[in-house]
Image (tube, rainbow, N blue to C red):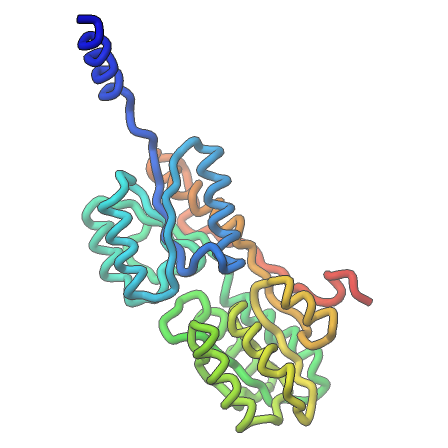
Amino acid sequence: MLRPIIALFLLLVSVTIPAKECISLVTAGDDPNPFWGEVIKGAMSASNELNIDLYFRGSSDAERQKLIIDYMVKAYPCTGMVIAPATSDLKITIDSLIHGGLDVTYIDRDIGGDRGAVVKSDNFYAGVLAAQLMKQQLSGRKNIALLRVKKGVASTEAREAGFIQEAQRLGMNIVIDKYLGLTMAESRKCATDIFAANPDIDGIFTPTGTTTEVVLRILEGRVLPTKPVHIGFDGSDYLDKKIRREQLFGYIKQDPFNIGYYGIYSMYNQLHNKHYEKELGISVIFVSRLSLGVK
């Protein structure tokens, strides 16, 4: 008789313990990517401080990300989701979830709609800063290559727009304006073709870590008529090495840890009716030989 009573007691206890609160995180890349790895670390730090569960997945492919979002909604009992939307094409899908009762915060990029908040770098300013820094180094040279990522990625489009506006204001000529693509393989092929056909380039702006690395690897075995001033984006040990070897002038660095960290806090505050900033800007810095301590 004792065992059934114990079993009944355990059953009653199990149904009265409330489920732990959770937030879902969907990124536009996965953990092996240095940027998204730091975003996830920041999000995990915030969730630990708040004593909530964090479930995360990521993909840079819009169709795959759409499937991930659908899976996360069905698989986990979270009422809030933090999303870095892969492209603006996901706006309709996400808005329908919001209208169905899901609270959403965007991180890293904003595609509009009814999201509760946005936590991201000031990407337009980052592009403006890149153009200003490049102009200082060109010594009268003007021919610039803007090597974009993919149409429809809100964060990089803002960087590109800021760069274009400021470059034109400063009298620089953007003679190459091409999309390289999201993957290493696709970007490598496009970049190889571009530099084979257009060797006389004075300056290069690459608005992501992937495009920056691809262009650097392509230029490793290529001799150009002039050494271009190359300004990239996001950081890695590889990019730091290239700066020390004077093969990269520098890069604009975001703060991905805090993007993830404050993204979770923003969502938590929304869910608990606490104050939160509807648009929270995370600062960027410029990394060069000087900031790396190289003379």
